[in-house]
Image (tube, rainbow, N blue to C red; front, side, top):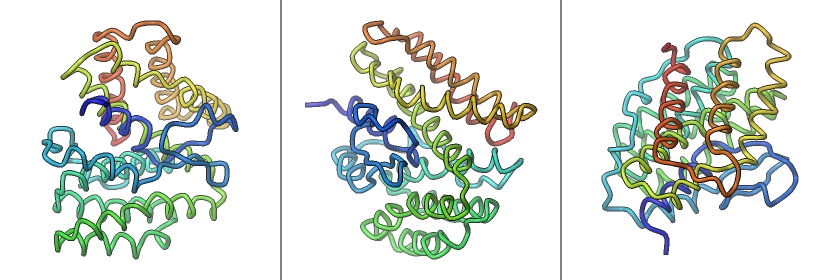
Length: 266
């Protein structure tokens, strides 16, 4: 039986984002995910079912309340990363039954989607999320948040913007890594720290960012994301290497710093 920290960490790291394109080898896919049009996406209903085991936990300790007030900043690269973080934050807010935060995040998803040209596919969903959260109807709120990432993905596919879809995914993964590493610092064990070792996803992100950097050599945001992913890849090492508590702290520092950068910090 997985402990609270182990199960939450595995869910957060593997599933909290909007999915990532990876190789066709099913062994590379995170648990509780499935391929859709060559995109590996989480299954939100299963995430919520798992998180329900911790209904009495203090979820607000792992929230980032400020994310709900984010406005679009920077170019499309930066906004796509912001959208990934916001969608990821929604899973935590819904589980926390934080109505104010869910409403704020629903509005923010719409604002960021508008900036990327995919407002139409999330407009109705955003309104429904705000409405159901206002009424504390958490079953309906979950159902609506379930579909947000699929709407965004479909919008990106319609715009033929795989690059932006990849960046949305990366933003979500970074938020997951931040949550996991924070939880591990609260209750560290070498076995739990193995949850941070995801070579398939990290290899994928490295390859995608390498390609983006060749297309946009002068884009500092891509360069910073690229270096951050490489740092995490080096820190997690290879299978059999122990991920020490100090290393977990470094991963938390890197992911937190990148999230600050994504919203226009330094």
